[in-house]
Amino acid sequence: MDDTFKIGHFTDKKNITGCTVILCPPETRASCHLAGSAPGSRETALLAPDKKINEIHALFLTGGSAFGLSAASGVMTYLEEKGLGYKTGFGVIPLVPAAVIYDLNIGNPGARPTAEDAYQACRSATADFEVQGTVGVGTGATVGKWAGISKGMKSGLGIHTLKEGGIWLTAVSVVNAVGDIVDDKGKIIGGALDDTGHFLAAKEGNKRWEEQRGVFSENTVLSAILTNASLSKLEAYILAKRAQNGLARAVIPATTSYDGDIIFSLASGELSASPDLLYEMGTEAIRLSIISAVHKSESLGGYLAARDIRPD
Image 1 (tube, helix red, strand yellow):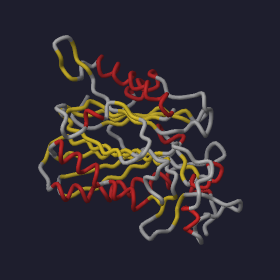
Image 2 (cartoon, helix red, strand yellow; image 1 turned 90 degrees about the vertical axis):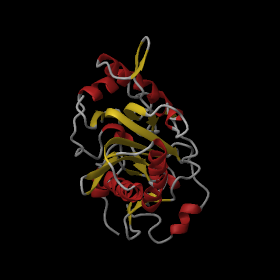
Image 3 (tube, helix red, strand yellow; image 1 turned 60 degrees about the horizontal axis):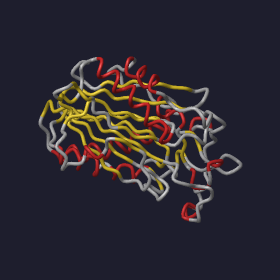
Image 4 (tube, one colour; image 1 turned 180 degrees about the vertical axis):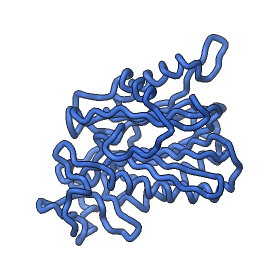
């Protein structure tokens, strides 16, 4: 692997699921913040700032709910073949934190990404972070499910990059939220729809706070912040935690009892930067990546995308 982050996808539009892998440059320092009430993940405990492991080798985001977590073994196989991992006396152990979204309610609920799919995503990974929308882990993502899944709308994978001098920061988000997605003026751009194709909460936002109808812990926003800045593990944790503010500005309601939100932060350590500058860049990049996930998605599985609905 080159000394830069790479991203690869496996997309199954027939069954409406997929996965995304982010391959890390050497000595990538990482942490995460688990904000949701029902996260589905593996290897996130080692990212806590008090744990001794500093480096990870890849991040894996997948559909398939908890079933999809087993596909991370395909990423480990790929990295092991490359000789990449945590070095022990008897071999290298690739460290691959992973997290899932619940996409069994769209497409084929018996289909979920496999280890071979994840392996192929690794093989296809490039430094091109331009591909967005209904791709990879975002293939089965939906939003606006506070009124029930039948009222929801299609979402996907969004990416946004900010730069300041020689520092860059990229946010990657798969948006599978129970809430509606709003722009910087509070206007709904993706969310629960009525029978005429208009947003349910456009005139009565308090409807979102009524008793949830058929909503369970089956929703999640998963985000990853990538930067070339140098951060301690504690600073990487604060970056992930502070970026939760960006999620809260773009999703209403955000991080509910029905969401399993997780934000990861990955720093390659090339340049020094003000941590507080990075924290604010991370917040804004997360917000914009969530909005991009809605704008870039396409209708699929009977769920309309933003580009296909009538404006209010």
